[in-house]
Image (cartoon, rainbow, N blue to C red; front, side, top):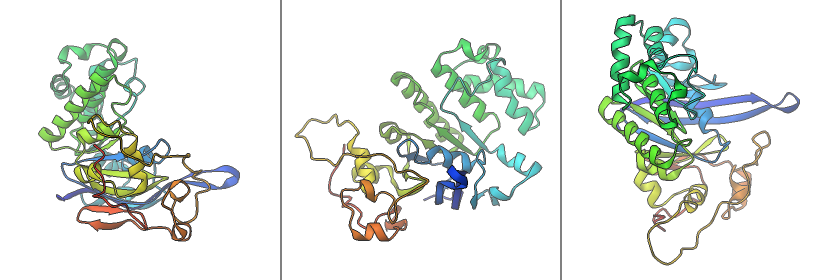
Length: 324
């Protein structure tokens, strides 16, 4: 893996629960993201994907752990230093309309990060906005209009332009194409891929759609109930998942290749209550391969091959099948 740009160690996020208790949304997450890579983060709704993305940017405050970025622990930064560092960290949100101020013109929306985070002059911001709107395929003339005058795909391009306005090093794209039509999804995905390649961006791409992740990601991380349970290169992951949960997720992806049907273990049941998680392995209540050890000992995230780690006592044979 290339030089690490951002890493998390022991990252935890707790929320208030019922009767004064606490709900653990993130459970001691360890994660490294390399300079210039796109890491796909997948899992069911409610597994903690968005919480992790927001915690890495300190949109959500971590309850414990550290986040190392450009030689500093983000969890300890305050005041002006935090403001300067945050210019290097941006997010593209799922809802391209709800994340844009409907009362402001596009040029004002895109210029704001330059004015606030970078201290640019109005003239500098105006020139840069025109260039960014051209870059994302809208044209400088779009700056004089308001968000409601654009389609969903165009609004997401505005959101991308705004995220790029502070010249960030790291971007979190949180379900950035899930609200778009399939044809528009492809255009936005291609745009994001080009930006990562041409501008040297590093991206955490959060999605529940494994087909989209396969298109854009260099590596894949899988979350379950607030934990990272598998990390692998894209090709290794899609060739043969190591965790039973990953295998069940991939089993739900349509197979277009002709041939005889294959027996697959589909995912059954619902995500457990994070306020009352199972003992031992958190996935054991839904796992068809669970044994006694799964109920008594919590598995560690361990490396089973170079660049590949899994949190499972009995990982799958990663060469057993090609899901695509």
